[in-house]
Amino acid sequence: MINKKKAAILVTVLVVLAVAAMIILFKGQAGAQAQQAEVRPSPAVVGQPMPDFTLPLYQGGALTLSSLRGKNVLILFPRGYAAENTWCTICNYRYVELAELEKGTILAPFPILVDGERTLSKSLDLFRTEWTGSKVDQNIPSVYIIDANGVLQFKYLGQNTVDRPGYDYLFKVLEVINGQE
Image 1 (cartoon, helix red, strand yellow):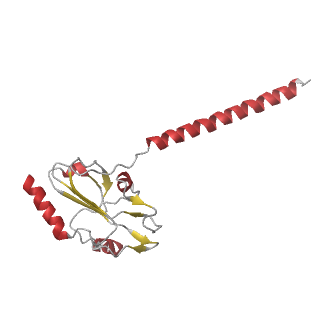
Image 2 (image 1 turned 30 degrees about the horizontal axis):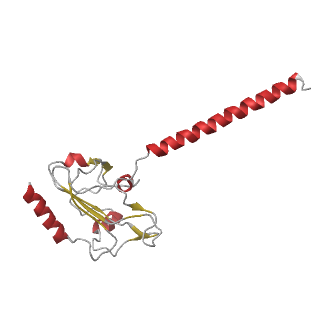
Image 3 (image 1 turned 60 degrees about the horizontal axis):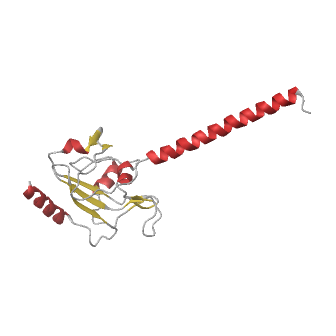
């Protein structure tokens, strides 16, 4: 027969184990709910409103896409890194401003958005840690043109630099968009 002291210790241990199990179970459920609540990637669809977003500006402050209503908006996503400590240089969009940013000056007369946490590129399903054999954090090179009403009118995604639209083509797309207004 178990004496009262041993029984009290056993009950205390069982209570502690039960509480620990409930805490672990609760944390597991909370973690699963947090993962379910995490934004799932949703590629933007041509002809549909572009999802609104707010990102910090390199120049300071922040910019919300909807604040640009009434203007056509061009968004470029460079690939970014090609390998550790190496920027992609094969794209015909060389992003001179990236090199200038490293020097501390900005030549571009337009806002440069900082997607450091990759919230926008992940939400649009552009961010990859492995893509076409490259195992480095990078975006799929992409171009988006949003019209003055906030509707995505043009989207390019791709790895191949041969079919990537040049500035002259993008200006033609903007002319067509402006002709529709």
